Structures are given as C-alpha cells and as structure tokens.
Image: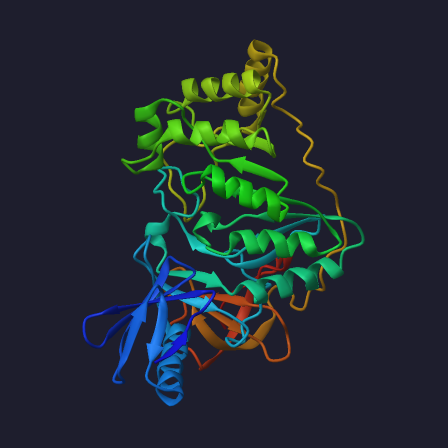
Length: 392
C-alpha cells in the first residue's frame, strides 16, 4: 500500500469508511471515504496512487469548507493562500499594525479557558479561525518590510496562541526576518511544559507575558472558568521561564473581585524579580462584565499604593513602544465599496469580504449574504487598518 504522511495533518480511521482529519492538532473534520484505505500513526495508506489522490482531493476540499475546533466546539475556517482573504484588516486573525514598531501576529482564535472577564467572550462567537503558517509569515514579512526600524513581533491571539500547533515554527519564522528584534508570546500558560519552553527558547522566543489574575487555588479556578485550572503548575512554569526568558505576569485587576490576589501577584513578582504588568479591567461591547470598570485615575492610585508597599515599579513600564511608518490606508470612513463575501465572521450576521484589487479584509456587520455573493457596504471603521462596514 502507498503511505502518505503530512506535517500539518494527522489522519485517523474511525470505523470501516469514516476518516477524521486533524489540522494543527485541535481542528478537525470528519469524512466518509468511498475508497479502500487505512491509517496508522496519523498517516494515510491506500492501495495505489489514484486512490490516494482521490482521498487527498476529498480532504483538501473539505478542509477549505469548514472545520471544528475541538477545544471550543465552534465551527472553524482555515485561512490559507487559496481562500483569497488578505491577512490585514481584521482584529481577530492575521497581522495587526497599529503604526508602531510592534506588529501583532494572530494565528488562531479560540481558547481552552473560559475566563469570567474575557474581553472576547467566546460564547458570543460563532466561528473560529486558524491561519496557515506560511501564509501568516508571508504577511508578517510584507508588513515588516514597510517599517523603518527594528520590530517587536507580539503573538497575541483572540484566545490562547498555544492551541496553534506550529507555534514553535511560527516563532522561528518571525525571528528569521532580519528586522525582528524581539518575539513576545502572550499566553495563559496552561498548555506549556518545560520541554515546550526549551523548544521555544531554541526557536528564538525572547519574552513571555503570562496572564495570571489570581494565585489562590479556588479563586484562580473561578476566574479561569474551568475546574481543572492548575495555578500551582503555572507558577512553577513561570519560575522556570524566568530563568530563560524576559518574563512578565499580566493580571487583570477587577475591583472587588481580585484585589487581594493582585497583591499576591505583585509580591511573587517582587520576590522573583519578575516584571508585573497589571491591567485595568475594561468593559468591551462584546466582552464579559463581571465588575465595573474604574477610572484610570483610581487605577493609577491603586498601583501607586502597591508600589509603595512592595517597592516594585508598576507604572510607566518601558515596553519599547515607538511610532513607526503606517501602512497605506486604502479606504476612508463612510466610503461605499462593493465587497465580495468570502467567509462568515466571528459574530452572528458578520461577514468578511474583500474589494477587488485591494489587499484588505473587511468585516461587514448586519449582513446575511452568502460567500461568493456581493454587497455594497459603507465603511464605518478604518483605524489601524482594521476595517468594519455595514450594508449601504
């Protein structure tokens, strides 16, 4: 029989004719295969080349139609060079450039936690996205080429970036660009191991920002929204990481919910000489709201008191954020354009489309058009080359 193995796919036979294909470990699709086949160790075995080609063709068509995120249970779309969707223009995936030396790299959506304060709120999202590695790096290199100086690449997903299986290869690819000064990973830490940290270090990762908003076992579980959240394990990994990477703990402060926990996080950071980057909880339209947002004046006073008690700097941290060249702005606010719908968006009645000849994605809200159709849309947002629109 002919053997065929893939770097990004794992294939498993389920019954006599059922095939489950996993893309990047956490995204899958089920198939009914008419031809005779077998699977062993994630590889496909078929009796001849013709049978193999037929099965592979079925798989490729299916993967481009839709997947399922095994962690969230949501439907998912695989964004690759064949979809025709640019990786600039959307805040959930691809490349986001806010006119600075920081470039946000977003390979995947979805998360293995269910935090009560999440600004994304996965329950309100209908679709997840996963981006092909080479396609993502292609767009990163394109945006990097427009910058005048060195770049800090920040892997900052709409969720948990470590559910993106080729994360190590992504780090290596980002660091391969001569303009990349530093690669930073934002993570909740739950999917890390010491072995994975060593692997990321060898790939060129420079800094890890851990999202940890409580250290008390029960409080940490409650804030994370999952019963198996293991704060002890995460704190051990933070300690290990601090010996090999620039390390920061970034808790979200929710007044009246985790006041004492923030104090504990600051104490740990002071003892271990780890940077603490406390974030003020902010209310987002589509995010969760477990607490009231406090003013930045009151938040600043809170940080000042913590600084005085622990002798640790918590304000005016130096993240080396500098203005740099911005990308060309192809649209203006209130402009009416004709969009071709390519994919559903993350929210209900959101569609993602493109304008012919312009390499930007546009999110069109209050739209029920099907992929492949056209809609006239009025641009409602252009800031930072993130584009939103509504039907005109």
